[in-house]
Length: 207
Image (cartoon, rainbow, N blue to C red; front, side, top):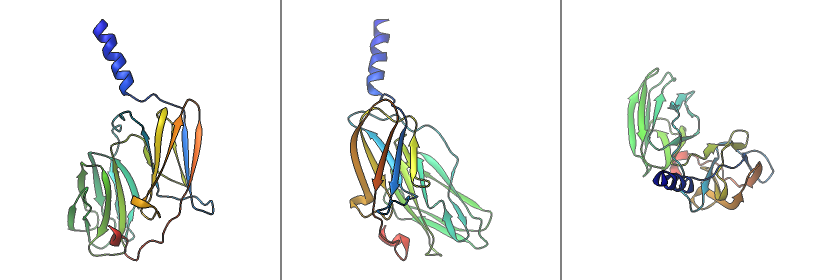
């Protein structure tokens, strides 16, 4: 019994306590919402539990674009790339976290890739230069993409945390801005005002 209690206390100390709801807003200097930003919450000095299983995950090729433009998936996720266009696509990435190539495949065909390492994956089409997307592969359970400029974490960890905001066009080192703050019980809202650069002529040029 004594060993059981000790093991339970050790498990509780290794897991971040759960706080209230955390809402993070990402806006531009004029206060307009920024979509397709990724917000990550990391406990400081404590391990994070693995992301819960979810899915399926997919990045569609539709109307000569990838959709969604930015996706967030956990490490180990399988992502499918269905083609809904009348033309063939050749999907690829040269990103260090995952290099892959899905050679020509036609309408109503699909290919899948497993992403087994955390990192940012820039995705393009080898035939259509205007097509680009970004895949944010994370080992954190607290990572979301902004919609209408905000995300909501209903199970944010309590204690000291680091909140980071990433966007492919963010004017900041590593395309990321971060903030340290303590979280306790109850609800909390944080706002990040960020500056974005114009999208490059070919979005893959910077990656």
